Length: 150
Image (cartoon, rainbow, N blue to C red; front, top):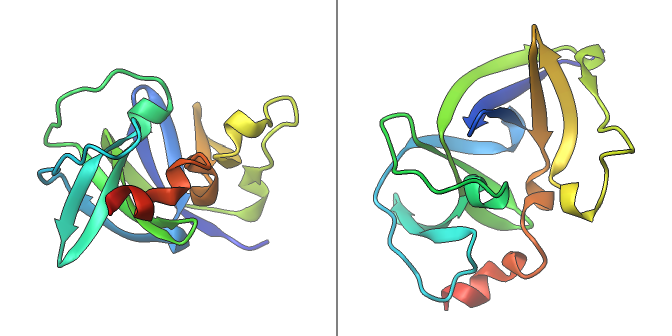
């Protein structure tokens, strides 16, 4: 069985992860420049080494209240539907290597259009970790980020 490294992080009380092969970089929090045209889950943009990257709030996606940024707030930079996106997370936990038999399909009872962001699930001790599908997080409208930025 093939092993997979997962970048595990927290949003609210829940733990999520991205396959490390899908992560470009993990960055400390930096000031976000607001943009009026962006949909509600986008907080604005950051300028990272010359790239203007939209910042997407996973707290808003999961219907959690915004909280002030802290020393633990991070950006996970990845590609979603061909667009470079900075996902704002509450706290980076760790990078964990899981064996193939430790990662499971999302149960059919949970699968829907609203949960297309769920790629797989895994557990570690008493922790349930939802592995995210970067291409399933943004709504159809949000995928048109380039037109919102112009």
